[in-house]
Amino acid sequence: MKVINVIIAEASLETIPSEVATHPAVISSCKLRKKHWSEVLLDTSLHYSAMKRLPNRLKRGRPDIIHTILLEALSSPINLEGHLKIFIHTLNDQVIFVDPVTRIPRNYVRFVGLIEQLFKYGQVPPNDANPLMRIVNLSFINLLRRIDRSKVITLSESGKHMDCESICRLALSEDLPIVIGGFPHGDFRNDIYECSKYVFSIYGKSLDAWVVVSRILGACERVLGIL
Image 1 (cartoon, rainbow, N blue to C red):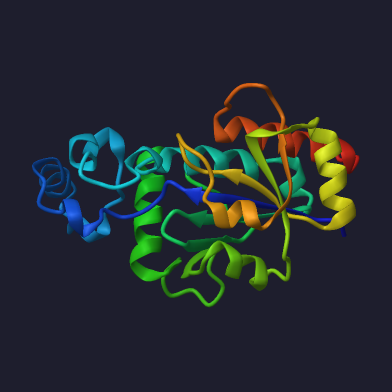
Image 2 (image 1 turned 90 degrees about the vertical axis):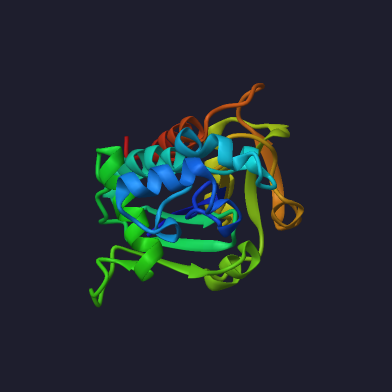
């Protein structure tokens, strides 16, 4: 069976870092949640003033991006037909492995609780022999080694223009994962570009990550004859 591997790279998903643990905005949000700061997701909508202290802050604190992407990907026909594997690689070099049968909560608050549980216990459900999601410390390069790949197709607004169907055909013919950024601003790190056999752009302007995911998966469904 032909499978499209999609890697969401440098996803803006992490728990609150210790550097900002004592900031009033963090203390306030954690008190409201009745959770220790290390068990709460960093979110720019709640921790914007605290995040001014953080390096690379424009790429951080957007768990809503991954929520929307997973809703789109896991409910898509290509996933329901068994032709999709999606991996979430975070800015801090952790990788979330997602079982294709996972159904992400539609409600954002419930999603946040799920991901906080994932970070705390390493998997969800916590004590299940076959978890729906698990997280491990893994760099981008080591993720490729884990899935037995060495090169990828990276989608970037700075890449050569290519239509989505052609990208999907190339990914299938050369068995290359498709990499899409999971951050709101900025560019990929050099190590990701170094692993890129091709760098393509699907549009002349910057697009939200979930829009890119939607267009690519739709194109792959057409290429595979699913739709």
